[in-house]
Image (cartoon, rainbow, N blue to C red):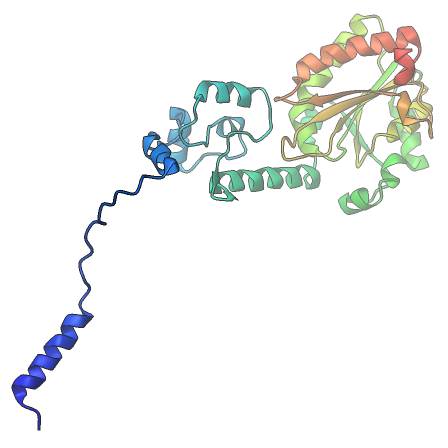
Length: 313
């Protein structure tokens, strides 16, 4: 049998081998340092990007809207070389600049903002225009041949047409043969109509009569596409027809409206005969400014008796 002292010695040696060994500093060598390592050592330590106090308060309260212009204006890069220049660039474009990254991936904040913008775009398509807002503006509603939102999205042709009963009601409720017929349509962004129509429509309804023009009865079209204006023009005999329509939303904005204007529009006419004033939203052309500009455009169309590319001739 093994001696007890020998057994204890063996156990002690085994335990000593299992214990972690202390790691000391690496030995200094005479090998020259890597230039990249020297450059990294000379860089200033990373600091958090500047945050506006108001944003900081909302962030702490958990109420920060990632899709808001204020949140998008925030610099997400760490230690930018020229923060002021970056802020000026961000103020001039809706492009996603200065967002930073984590390795090859987007930062969590940037990814969440993308998802928030995508959700806003989907909401703009699938929600309905605020009926209370239409009532305040005194607009009655007609509907194209689309029965619901799904058919509107899958059958664009039906969004360009009205049934005869609807057209008969339009003749009954509206002024006939106006100089200018203005109406609104949801298009692909109900959000655009909700945000811009209350500000742009009053400018048109006041500015055009002030220029001496006869303006028709305004109304709202549900599930309307742009060429629906051709049938409206033929039905009411308007010299100029202008539709204020919600545009297809994107990740930059979900509330952009456009004004499509045509002189004596007819069903099946070329798209080149339409004049378009686009990018009407709070980060583009303001609704009030666009309304004043559209008044001048319509005046020029009536004077030239042409619209679209023909107006440029």
